[in-house]
Length: 94
Image (cartoon, rainbow, N blue to C red; front, side, top):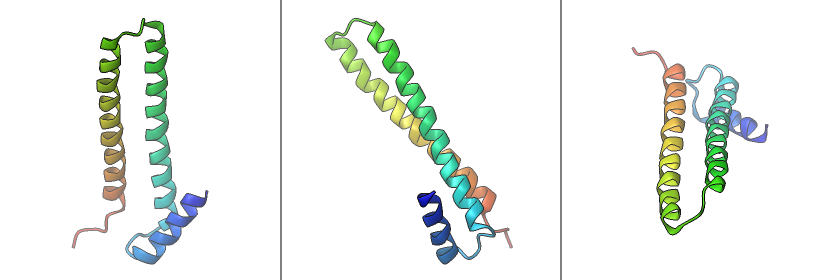
């Protein structure tokens, strides 16, 4: 709630073209939450799978690659979510 309120105020002050700063702030927070919880769910699923395997030096190296891939996917999904919001709230072309 605090982040949403602060974002609403910031948008109202700095983005006068946004027709509904409160709606945009709520959607931005929801998008961030959806991407974040999806990433956490995948991370937990990967952790559950990893604990079933016998840990070796080779799996430790693979874990780093998997973590990097998960982080990259998180970044891409977050970028896509905010790009969608940007398109939805962009002022109409002249």
